[in-house]
Image (cartoon, rainbow, N blue to C red; front, side, top):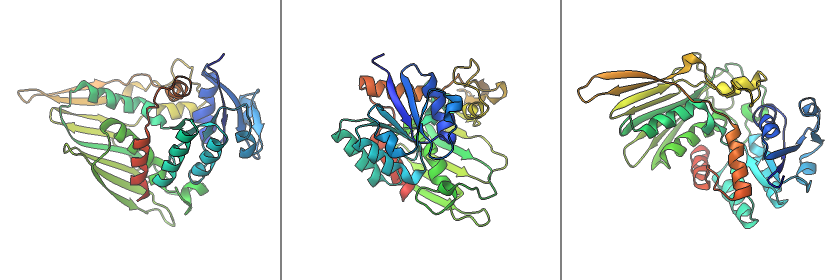
Length: 337
């Protein structure tokens, strides 16, 4: 098959085993050639034909591989993307794309110079909850937007063991971990903000990284957007709240795909990506005479397979990748300051 893309994944931890390998294995446009496993060799239990590489150098140096998935710790993204581009590989890179906007500009410039594609993996654009927000916005039922709140909350009181997330290395902390999801979602919907300000906090005992972050984005049309992520929210409220001149929309974060993948449900399962019946969003519309009408909004089935559809269309057909360079540069400018 001429359109088959041969791909290698740099890590088989949570990201590789849950968010990448299952989709690459089932997508008819890809051949999952191999995974880097420096010590524990376990990928072959799920993928018997897989090639296990002992080092990143070995995988990137394999002329048989066309696309490299960089899903290693945040601080290594720039180094490994640079190495892959120099080896003539297309790259799909996990969030955060890089630690600084300067690094990102360097990588985009090199990709253009070498006529390669470097694509940011922002899978949350294909979450059912986010897509319901997009659908409501595009319907125009909210009127002109005034205020928007996006949240991504967890409860992690105890300091975790992850060096990449919990120690003072570049790209650690909740801002760089969950902030890229929030920023990408807002920028994809509303564009580049005109101004912004940011607040960080450290509240867990003995933490050395931020476990709370809020970003306030302002737009030229007056829209005010508030992004919040915290590791100390025991009872999360709505993850998406939008207020407009004609109504409001509230939606909880369902995270249905991640939960299903962690429980071994495959992307080709008929129930994959379908939210539970009690997870509908609530749309409140105010009529011309002031009466309020509340209605439930059921999210459509969603799948992260669409990220790999986008990648395939870009590499094989030259279709522009949905996550643009300008969006990533602005995201990193906000994260790094």
